[in-house]
Image 1: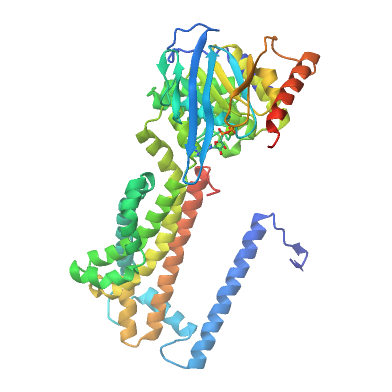
Image 2: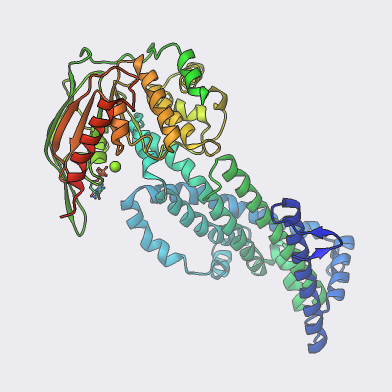
Length: 274
Length: 280
Ligand SMILES: Nc1ncnc2c1ncn2[C@@H]1O[C@H](COP(=O)(O)OP(=O)(O)O)[C@@H](O)[C@H]1O
Ligand SMILES: [Mg+2]
């Protein structure tokens, strides 16, 4: 790259690489904000506030809380969403991991489970929201929507991971006297962990999309998605956009965190090449 | 690499407090009987006859090499000895017991090492002991002893991906030796290593095995390696594998690769093998 004031970009220097990525990312975001600004000025519609109006609404929301409907802080909204999200996530892990291991392990179980999985998987998780919320209730419903969103990526990745295991490793374990059960939890389970982490990474992204949508159907929960829909229906567009910004930031933080954990675990397990 | 040398010298002997070999067969007597073994792999669109009526007796304590054209069925023979693959017909007797499943009387060293990447070097070596239910402290002590024998005691806490190819193969060897099996099966164990490391590993292996009465069945595609290591060399024909010749070598070790008889024997075996490699 170019030489700027005696400074030459060095591909082998991690700080240089990091600096380069950061500069490009910031430039990208700045361009995005300007494009948004242009669009909102061009359309001149109240439904698309300018970034500045959005920023002001965001600051107001963070500093003063929800001054429109009264009383609640932004943290209350976020906390409520995170709680639903976390419960859905944990439920998905508890169900998908053992199921994925078993489906990956046994051909018969796989053949039995596959038709059901293939029927269920293409259904958008959000489609379940009204059904779950009406059929069960508004607390459990959104949790189940998040559950569905995270469940399938985790399940398919674990199944894939178990099938990708180096057969030599299982043979090695067998020659050292390992029983089928020992082969399962001493070889197959650890081999599948990097794939599980990958499934979690994908699942968190999908789950985060689900939570907001699910909350639109469950106003009683009072999550950030509920705030978004209230503001939008009342025509308070800057506030609605402020909510969108918060949702985006939380989404980035969640997947970034997952990516970080994925990296640490695969490196610790000496399996970063997966 | 003085580590091997040092490790071999310090690792007094390969003892067996916990794993007493079960057989009463004396050194030099026939221990493994491969009887009329046949194997046909059946897949959806083909049938491959790998072995047909293959018989061989293997003596206790010997190092027997199997050489043959690539794809002739060497690995298949070894995997049947390990109990990982079932023969189509015929049987394998170890002592007077029929071999049908993997067992702690046989250890195996794989060509691509087959080490567990998520375990440390020590934990890899401990695997078989863990399966045998040995208590933690004892396991650790024993694993460390074998790591010392292969000269890797300094690397006990390392991860597998931090090791070189030669070091990985030494971990695999320690892992196979640690449970003190009667028989060690090695499938082209040094095939993935560079020539220099390979020679060091061969010398190291001989020193380690000098102290034990284990039977080694050693597959290699290197005739040089076979002549350097073996008490006997079994030369196989192309698939379906038959025994073309069994060569006895009673020269003392370590053998001199440059000696006339070494080069002459190597040349003769190579010529035998080349006849098998002719495409027809
Ligand atoms: N699991 C299997 N299924 C089908 N064919 C196999 C299988 N394993 C090996 N073969 C075939 O059997 C033949 C002998 O294989 P192998 O024992 O690995 O030979 P070698 O070790 O002497 O190179 C090869 O032609 C190989 O393709
Ligand atoms: Mg082979």
